[in-house]
Each structure stands twice: as structure tokens, then as C-alpha cells.
Amino acid sequence: TKCLVAAKGEEAKYIVRTLQGRLRVGILSATILQALAYAFVLTEPAKGKEKECIPDIRKEKPAPSADKIALRMIELEAATKQAFCEVPSYDKLVDCLLSGADAAELSKACSVTPGIPVKPMLAKPTKSITEVLDRFKNIKFTGEYK
Picture 1: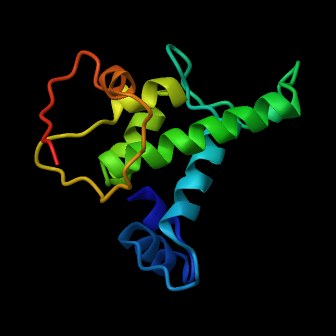
Picture 2: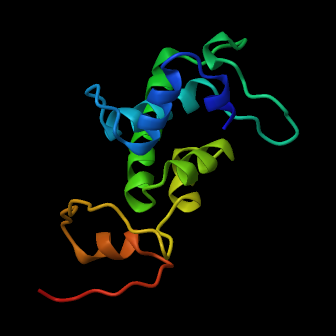
């Protein structure tokens, strides 16, 4: 809401179109998810008793290496895309990211929820049944033979 109120000129139109997924300027959901991931790597949300986010981790003293930042961007981008497939809601995804969830925690914080349909996902081929069972460890699931 604050973002819309602060918007000037045509900014409000593009904010609404972005949230609706109808930007019409050639930007797709994957680009938005990548941008979200990169933004949360470079500008970490406040954790614990901190009241403000870290403006830009590249300006910290000592600054993390470029390789470390690039690796974190790749990891969070993959986790963000996976989480969005399981919970296709920007509201829930951003809430999870704002709570401080990193790439490892995002799948737990933002997972399949009753009442929210999942996005169609491509199958992930595996080499053995143990890979499937490892993925669903400690989770109830059903399977069918085809």
C-alpha cells in the first residue's frame, strides 16, 4: 500500500501490473523472481533486534567476496523459483523472504499449503527410489504406479 501511495506518474500502473503478472513490457515471472532473489541477497532483511535492513552488503566492512555473493544469488534464485512453484503467491513469498529465510530455509518456510494451488511443475527425473524418498523425508505423501 505504501508503495502505491508513494508512486509518481505511471509508477502505480506498473506496480499493479507487476503484482498481477500482466506487465506487458516483456518481463516474465521468472525475471521478477530472479530480481526478488537478487534484491534479498544484496539487501538483507533485518534480523532479530535490528530494526532496519542492511542497505547493501557490498558496502559492508568487510564486504563479502564477489564469488560468495554470486553463489548466494544463484542459490536464492533457485530456492525462490522452487518456492513460487509450490506457493504461487508473491505476498507469501515476500513475507517468507522478509522474515529472513535464506535459500536453505525458504523451502520450509514457503511450502505447499492447502487451499493454494501449486503451479504446474516439470518432473525431475531421478536415478533411484532412494532419491525420491530422501526428497519426501518426514513428509506424508501418496504415489501411484504408472
